Image (cartoon, rainbow over all chains, first blue to last red; front, side):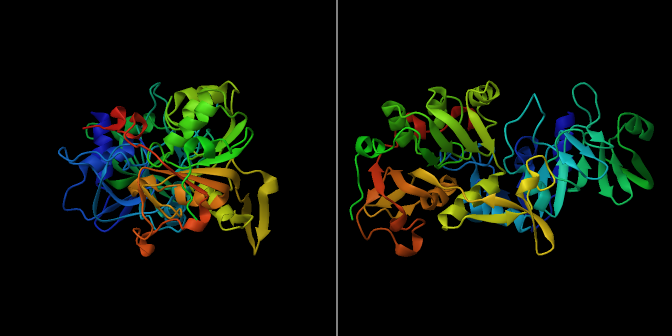
Length: 214
Length: 231
């Protein structure tokens, strides 16, 4: 399944020793795929560092949720703090990696993921601060929307969350890095040709000699 | 010095037209019992300040659905379809801020200040030109402190003086709001005797608190939300 492919590939971005924030929706599903040996602190912007998935036998605590509202558990070494400290941590760049969803991303690493005028305006939440202040922002989303339109654009048309903030984009079709020369394809989905990828993508893609598959 | 109060008496001091900060991020830390009393007493034309709008027919959503709230100052209401619809139909005025900026505006008021400078959202549609200032060679945005008439706080544990402790992720906005409002009303299921709380482990010091109400947290509002339990 395409969604699973994105989750499994995005999980590989997380490295030992990192502090990581997972955005609401698709990214929080990564929590269920983290290998036990990985020593990572997941930050949840509602005020905790060290979130982990509840084991099936563990009772849910009504006072312990992640930012998406799911009942979770904490790992050894976890800490709780108030919302101003939580965002101090974010704005001071203490989160190594932020994995977020997107409506649109473009070649310059501009991100639109908070508002679709006339259709979807639930508020900003933590998106702007995470996108603007995390040193490494990885986007995970389907390559195309339900109508087949590319989400990977030459230029975003929706209201921006932050400019020039994205470093890597992981979709069901490709892994692409935002570089000074443009969007470089690093990996392509198995069974997909480069021509097919280019045809389904609005943004200009830079194809280098070595492209992996996933 | 004993700040214990009856819920009816203390909520009756809240007039219609008040601005009220309400603790909580989703369910955890939401002072449901204080909210329910406000619903019962029926004060109107309220401005509420809360991270979110809870979920449909839960917490502050009850006050909004009952027409008691003119304005909501918040960060994200994505889990409440009713309030989104009321906002779209202009039945309620909603102001959105980035979550950490909302927290900082409240913290700044709690520290007795009047505002701060930030670069968050500076090149997006949430920034008006008149908010911009050139400060030490950098273009920044002015954010004002956010004060309120009242704060409704949920604490895990309190003593009669109003020293407070919060539970896990139920802390969130509570300690910030407890410093930013003129009158601070606390609900807690657990009032302990003076001297029981360890001074080093107190999250909010008693000087910020005006009233402490003992509640029964076995009522439904404080239980798990089935839809979010997952496995």
